[in-house]
Image 1 (tube, rainbow, N blue to C red):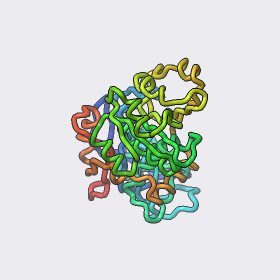
Image 2 (cartoon, one colour; image 1 turned 90 degrees about the horizontal axis):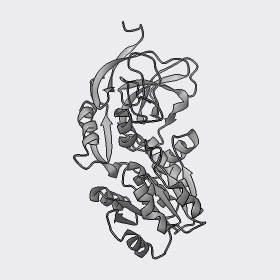
Image 3 (cartoon, rainbow, N blue to C red; image 1 turned 45 degrees about the horizontal axis):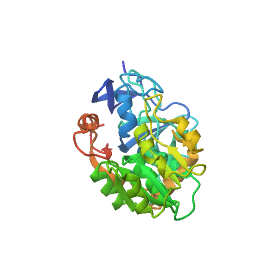
Length: 337
């Protein structure tokens, strides 16, 4: 029985491992300290959501059935008790959902209307596209990665990985004044990086990749590697580009494996190493600021923008890797809610 005051809302639901559908779920009234957000756009985080969908996200088991996603934009539709500083109709960026019911949130952003803690909503900056802002959390991972390294304007940064995290890390490093080269293996994604102003790109299958990178940079060492790939074969490939005692690595992607880097090699060369994950208000607010300034951009990276009802096909695209994709944005502005 649907509780009094609840609504029925469309949501993307992971029903079991590698099974996804769009269905109506019950959304209770916003509780104390919560707001209900009517979604305009949400962006799929293909890597992390892919692990969750396959029940391979080792930080927590997937509670099938559940609503995935952790980044969306929209407007406030209702206010819970004790909420201050917000009004119905305010344009916002929202992260996690928060509610109880038969279909709980596993973060919970891919839905037409959902409750979010007041602490997890942000004002949509003036002039920032709600499509761009719907990728704010993934953009923040890239911002966080680039913010960790010591660098001077004009220093070279090498970004490993051509997915959204790698793309945003490269853009954030450019925003800090670095010169950036991206290493990846998908020509379409590398072309998009160049379109977004990245200085150079290199195919990771280049059998003389170290020499190619040094020629591009016109120097022997990069100041840092921003690694969104996190595999031993990648580490072995880029280690010669880091100067012993001075080199820096930022690991900025999720992996389900316990051992994915040679820690002894890092110690032997005294490489400074950072690990980044999640978000906080300070970093996410700074990310939104850079997006509003046009220094972090999703729009050129969107390969698929589709009605939310196409979600099953889009997740299948992620699973099979059958067609090149990058940014996948769900549009929730249709009449059905």
